[in-house]
View (cartoon, rainbow, N blue to C red):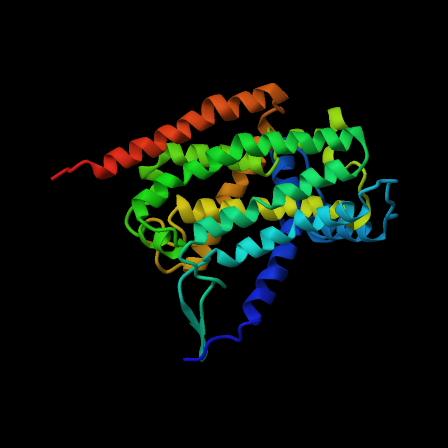
Length: 330
């Protein structure tokens, strides 16, 4: 049975990821408005659904200024570094199992890598350079402080984020994404790795600079943080990267802890891709809920929590999992 041409799936994935920020921003506004007894977007388009499209068009036509910075090349490169690595990493995420459309055989993923976990963590770690370099190259003390905060925050939470999935790798015995999902056919790893799931969830929120961990762009302290000196679509690429990163870490949470495309309660009549997206939606909803609920941490609280709470918990989870797997139970 023939497969789709190699260029088709990357184009589909790229266009879907470009739509992700528009959809997530709209849903965030509506969900938080509902939680706060407000209406949310309701003027532009039916139910306000075209409001984010209008916002994107506004960014295209806004004045594109550039500060007098001696680092012009880095200044222009930083927004691309905040977005492009996320698109590359998404190519290794499996969204479902093999299925057929007419005479074509469709695999809902682009790359099936034996070291898929390492590939994704390596590529997504580049994204922080975009934010850090944006703050450094803007020739502004506010953007520089935002960039420095990003570096410290990344160091504090990246280690815990990586350690949180080591238990999953130990249990599945593989770094391949498909093998990790297949190992959860009967029991999801969120049951076997509750500490890992909690650590991953908190560290992922910190890694994506979302409330209550949005210190790199704390507008009450740093004007706008690392992106203070950006405008037009150069500015727009940073929130685009933030929302694509939200979607990406939600997909990884689904693969690592929520059974991937495996159904809940044996409801196999629902397609696996739909199950996958439902679980991703649940994780994204957690982002919205936390933003509507919690205040921003102080910076010293942020760093202390990463090193003195999350890191020891993640390390304990790895050691405990290794001990339990190697105990001869029979």
